[in-house]
Each structure stands twice: as C-alpha cells, then as structure tokens.
Image 1 (tube, rainbow, N blue to C red):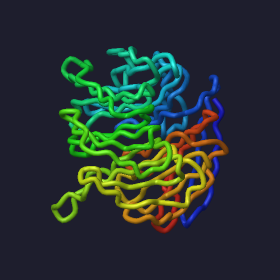
Image 2: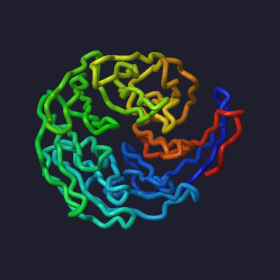
Image 3: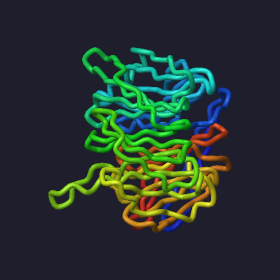
Length: 333
C-alpha cells in the first residue's frame, strides 16, 4: 500500500492530509464511513470493504462482500452491525448485513434488478431504507434480536434512479433524492409520501441531516442539506416543506455533503476535486481547498468531528485534520 502526507494552510486553518492508496485494482470510492468509536475508517473497494486504523494510517483488515461496486455503509445496533449496499450497474444489487467488527456475514439480500445506491438506518435502529437505480426505495425492518432484515414495503414515486436516502434525527421522516431532480419526504412508519421538492434544476446526488441539537432546552429545527449537478447546495426543513437557503459558488456538480457533529459546519465536494466548508447557519463559504485531482464522490466525518475523509474517482482516500481555533494543528494521523 502506498501512503503519502501533505500539509497546507487554507482560510486560517491548518490542514493535514494522509493519502491511503490501495495496491488492489482501483475503483471509484463512493462509500466511506468511520466506525462508531472513530478508530476505524471503512472504504468501499472492489468486492471488499477495506478497514483502516485511523491512528496508525494503515489497512488492518478487509471484509469480502458480493458487490463489485460498493455505494454506501450504515451502522446499526449501537455499532454492532454493519450494512453494506452496492451491486453491479444494470444487473443486480442489494444489501449485506455483517457483524461488526468481526466482519462475519449475517444476511445477504441481493435480489434488486439494478445497483443499490444508498442505505440508511433510522436513529432508533429498527428501520432501514435501501435506495437503488431501479427507481425504488425499499423499507426494511431491522430485527436486532434475530439480526435480520425483513422487507416491509417499497416506495415507487420516483421516476428515475434514487441516489440518496436519509432519516430525520427523530426517525419520523425519510428523505430521498433522485436523478429525476426531486427530493421527496416520506412518513417513515407508513411509507406515505408527504411532499416533494423540485427546486433543484438537475440531478440530486446527496443528502445530509444536521445532527439533533438542543439549545436552551428546545430542539433546533431539522435541517437537511442536498447537493446537485446544478452546482448548488440547498438546505431544507423537510418537516414543514420549506427551502431555507441556497449555497452558490460551486463551479461543478456536488456529489457529497456532510454536517459536522457540532452542527457548525457543512462540508461539500464534487467534480471540481475541491472541498468547501460552509457556515451551517448561513450561505457563507468559510474556506475551501483543492483536495483531489479527480472527482470527489464521498465524504465522512469522524464522530468527534476532528477528521474528515474524502474519496475520489481514481480510488484515492485522504484523511484531513483541522482546528480553526487559533489555527493549531489538531493532531497527526
């Protein structure tokens, strides 16, 4: 495995980059996730989930899976179960359930007619959404005691491939995004469509909910961010059907968005290979830096918010650490 490190300063913030390049055949990295304790980074490779030790900057294990292309990860059962979605474009797809961290396969549902593009678990841990390029979103019950996924219903209102799915922090809502340019809001329990947003003017690739936050004893409204081929990031209040703001300034399609755990920042990245940091309470672009020489497809933030992972079309994965306060380097991975 080849590794290299670089340091840069951008917008008053020190940036440390560690690049993780696998020696195996390189495929676009479209799935990244930190383990719940933040000690491991999961990277989707060809029929393999590669697991890196974040502190040691090296691959420590791998999990074999059925999918030539891995599109999404999700953890469940307080981090004891790992869901992996993916497939073969135009041929098949689905989701596999693994014990974590052992990596033992528990269940495999691979009967989709096309690739599964996204998997999400609700915060209460009992419902899974599986989106696909077959235009469908499956809702599955997660029986934790039996460690089994049970199909419940299929949502069929999208007219083109569905690329993203995310549950609201209170588990009541499911939001999905599609090539059909729409963002749809569903009642998670019943699968009933509540509303549809059509403000984006091109393909919508990604979604991210702002983490639940309580201020002065009152919870803040649920905000959901989306990124699109129309070169914008938009922020929504899906529970009341309101678009809050549009973030412009991107010069290419946006493929990934992610809120920081402290809700202060929203990260975006895409075709430009640039990572942007957006103030989460406005449309202000705080800073940006050229992170990759290729299209960035995936972003993931560590649970403590100190480390950002990015993955690109060429198969490269980079880890970034930063600290805005007094511009001190937070730590070296």
